[in-house]
Image 1 (spheres, helix red, strand yellow):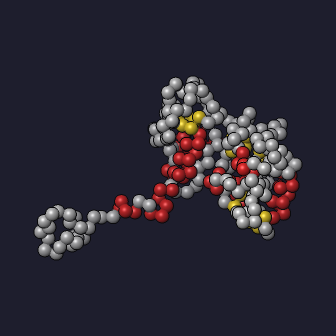
Image 2: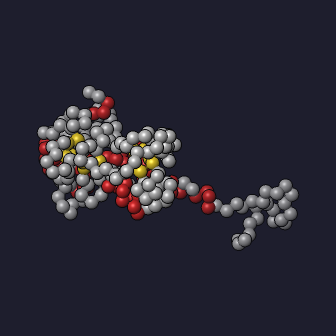
Image 3: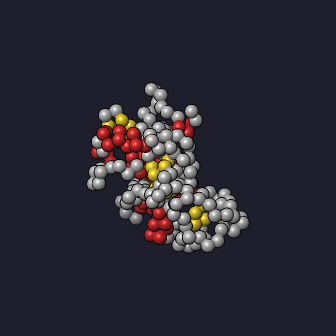
Length: 245
């Protein structure tokens, strides 16, 4: 069995009943939910589109998950070739199915909003780009070349129309920035850039940016409270601080 579909042993994290993987990015597949001994990634279950309308994903009955697993076991992932493909292409008449962790390898698009639709490589939405990037164009995030051809792995800001990124780079930026701070690194456009990215499969979590977590920059807001001149003349000493000024 390949590493891509490695199942968990008794000493490892419980395996998701839908994608059968544990070595996944929780930002892409979501946290692992458990109910009655059944373990499933939140987004694997969400994109399977079997949750009753109006029900919270965390409250899905185990019987519904079990039924989804049985249905998925009848489908083969067109990317890795294994059974258990719970996600189907939203295009009418398309019979392609895949696992959520296989989506990027298969150049699929999964939309993390509203109805959480998924599309295979043939039917995925594509950016309306008139010209490929010029030779020597670099990604504005990693500064590595993006190539001179249009591809699934290369994306363009539709607002300024000349800022190119690798899909993986812009996805990582979205995960770090969160919905509150995500914008084009070049033109700083928010609304149009945000809309384009989620339509074309970039997951932008609804949370503050990671750099604000745990007061990571709290030290920048601290006031310097000690005199550093070689000969301090303050009668109260170097540590005395005025309440204002």
